[in-house]
Length: 137
Image 1 (tube, one colour):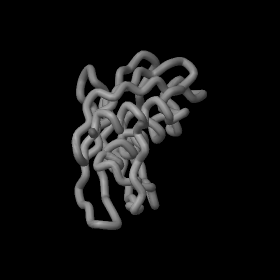
Image 2 (cartoon, helix red, strand yellow):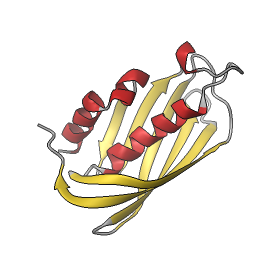
Image 3 (tube, helix red, strand yellow):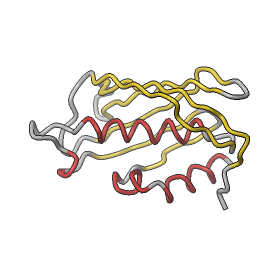
Image 4 (tube, one colour):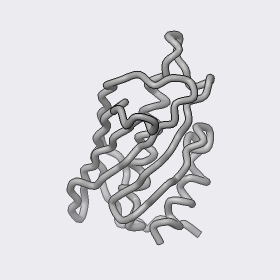
């Protein structure tokens, strides 16, 4: 069921499609994604633009927080950029559920460079969990 939800979300999230995010793994409360930095993701300093990194981490957050099939919507998110990413870098985003109640959840997402494991960004987010099920087909 979790993989089906992840595939549904990937196919229907326009930003994930544009960023060409790969779903590498999805389990209850966990998601692992991959993304390669392209030229259209760079800022004026020839580094990956922060918005692209945020969107990458945010998609991993979305898959992890919706992994039980109940609609979870972000109420807040925060990101810290620790190192730059450059054209051609392959990045990995891993989302981990740290706490979940009937109505809320808290997640931490690390974005690392695949080649050397260097931390690129640390993202955290909270969700509100609705009583609505995801219609993943």
